Image (tube, rainbow, N blue to C red; front, side, top):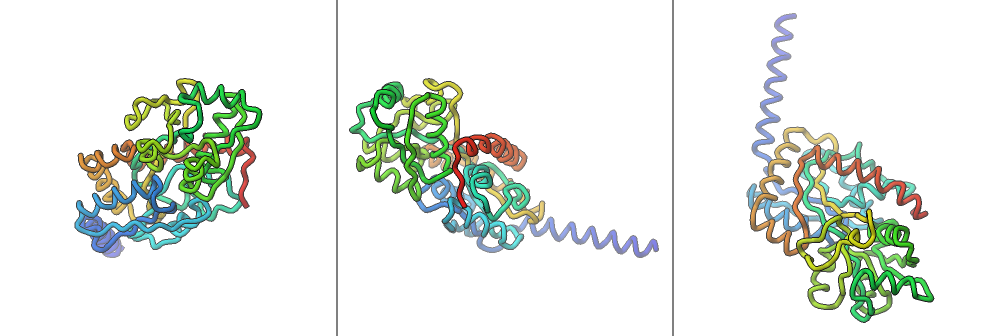
Length: 322
């Protein structure tokens, strides 16, 4: 009996050593970072900057793979079913993880049970943008214009139940200004129509519209963060005009639930090192992304808080997708 216990103890010790050695050598082959949003969006921009830095740190390729569809559900579901070996990761945004499970009748994944949080990566505000031909130069002027308009002003979004849809609904509810929602299949076509004058206004994540703002193709009237964005210091926070208005988009890195703790811890360390690098932080700043810290526990808290926060807003908006 004692010998069996001794053998069992040795087996456990060897197993622990092998897992530890595996984590220390990780990664030994290319790592796929699944991005469930389209190229050019916030998550894609952040993912490619992070992947490049992780590749530099490890000497192994970190490859961004866009798997789009159903507002992020297709790629997220794919990531949930991927092998639990640490070589298929999910880089996703708060709207997909926290809003979609309430918005969709069948989402295909559980944001808590199916994923192991690794680390928050960055956060961005959405920006209220208008076509430069719109006479409003400030948020106050825009709200006055909307109130005096004989018809509801239309605002474009990336789709029903998207964060920018809900931000528009929140702005309408908190300001008392009627706004008519016009959903698009992604933020890029929405912004194209705002710039073309087919729709007056849109909410869009800062990385997806910052260059258009700098080029004068769009005018920024307010950011959705509680404070002004360092990337647009002269643009008001919407909360300066509409109290208690706030809603940011965060990007977080997850592994499938079941990946070894040793590997997820190693990934957390790598992400922390990457986010501390001055060149990465400069590239984030240029894109309008603020790096985040907090580790796995911080990301899990952000996710749970957002699920609780957005569920009543989605239900109040009446948005449901089959």
